[in-house]
Length: 563
RNA sequence: UGGGGCGUAGCCAAGUGGUAAGGCAACGGGUUUUGAUCCCGUGAUUCGCAGGUUCGAUCCCUGCCGCCCCAACCA
Image (cartoon, rainbow, N blue to C red; front, side):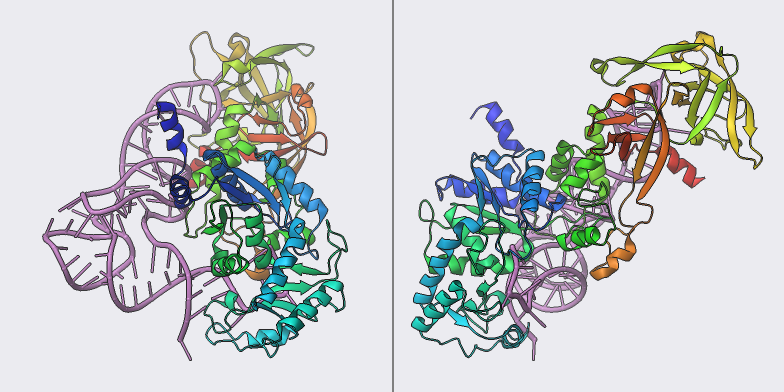
C-alpha cells in the first residue's frame, strides 16, 4: 500500500458500521458492497435523512461498492409522485448519484406476493379475520403475553384461498390481513404474529389500481434488500426491534445473495438538532397548519429549506461528517451546523455592502454634483476573487446600529464628534445630529477627509471603527428576510405542544434595504456576504429578495449584553 | 412481571487493563480597512453510581440508578 492509499484509508471513518463493513469485506463474506437509501415518498427529506444519505452513499464510495436509491412505497394512502421527484432532487443536490440503481419496493410486489404464498404453504403465515381493535387486545401488552387468534390454525388450503381472494379484491379494506405465524408470547412485540399484508383499495402512484393488497414495511424491506443484493442494510435505532423479524423472514423465505450470505441490518442513532423539529410528522404538521411557507421555507430543516436558505451542500456534508455514527442518542447543537455553514460560506462568498436599517449621512464638504468610483476587494482573504468599483457621493446610508448618540465605552463606531472609516472610502467625522420632532435621529451631518481616500490616512492617524455604507443616489432597493431558529427551546416539547414553542420572531422582513448597485446582478440562489452583517442568498423565487442564511459571529453583541 | 438499546467535559465524541484524542461552544490574548476571518492559549485528578477482581479499571465482574425505543392493518 502506498502513501496515498494510506491517506485515503485514514479518511474513512472508524465508526462501528464501517468497522463491520471493513471486516466483512476482508473476510470475503460478500461479493461486493451494496447499501441503499430507502425513503418513503410521503414527505420531504430533512437534515436527519442527510445523515443516512451521507452514510449509505459515503460507505459505498469509500469501499468501492454501490448505493441504491429505493423508494419504500408500500403505503399508497400517504405517498405521492411529487415527493418522489423532490427526494430525487434533494439527493442529487447533496451530491450523490445512484446511477442505474433507482428502485421501488413496488417493483417487487409480484415477487413479494409469491413469497407470501410460499410462507402460507410452509404453514408460516395465515389469514386473520380479527378486526383491528380485537387484534390489538389479542396482542397483549408490554408486560403480558398475547393470545393466539382464533383464526391462527386455519388449514393451509383455506389460507391460500382467502389470500388469493384478498388479492382478487373480494373483501373490503380492513376485512382480513395476512399474518406471520411466530410467537404471541414473545417479549418482542414485533414477533407476536406481525401483519404482513393488508387490504387497501387505494390508487398507488406507480402501480395504479393493479393491487388492492399491499405488503407492509416488514414484509417489503428485507426482501427488497435481498432482491437488490444489499449487503448492509443501515437504519435508525427504532428499527432494532424489527431485526429479528427481518432475519426470520429472510430465513423463512430462503433468499440469499452472492456467496450465500443474507443482507444484514445494522442500526445507528438518528440525528436530533437543537431548536428544530426533525420528524416527518411534525414537519408535515408545520406545513399543513401554515406555520411556515411550505416544505422549502428557509426556516425548515428540510434539504430544500436549507437550499433555499442558501446553505451550501458542502456545508451539510461537512456537518454530517463531523457527526459520529453511534448508537447513543443525543441532541446536536445548532451551533455546530452554523459553524459548518459559516466555514464554507466564508471561503466562497464574495463580499458586498448593503445597509439593512438605513440612517442618512450627508458629507457636508463633499461637492453636491460629484460622485466617484472606489475600488473594493471582493474577498480580503482571497485576492484571486478580484476587485470591484462602488460609487461614492455626498449622501450615503449607514447602518443605524453604527451610530450612538451617547456611546458606551468600547463602542468604536460613529457618535457625535467621532471619526470612523467608511470601508474602502474615506474617514468621516460626525459634526451634527439631526432629529425629527419626536427626538428620533434621522440624519447625520459629517465631513470627510479627502486625504484618506481608500481608507488610509497619510499622517498615519488611526481610527478604531470601520463601517459599511452605500451611496444613496446609486443604491438599489431590495427586501431582506431575516431568519432565526424556528423553535425557542433546545428541545421542543413532544405531542402538539411543540407548536407553542414556535419562535414568533423566526422571520423578520425588512421591506426596504439598500444595496450597492452591483448586487442587482446577483443570480437566484447565489450567496454573498454583506460585510459586517452576514451571508445572504438571493431568493430562488421572488426577485430583489435576499434571504439571510446566517449572521456573522458577533462579539460586539456579547460585549454589549454584558455591559 | 416484558423485550431491545444507551450512559466519557455545556454539546457531538475517540479510546481501552497501564493511567482520558479531536471538533463545536465558552473564556483569555495576538493580527486585522468586516468588533468577521486567521493565529495562539485555557478545560475531565476523571469516564452514571456502589462494590468486587487486579500491582493497576473508564475499559473485566456484580448490583443499582438514569435516559431512549416497542403494544399502527405507518415507515
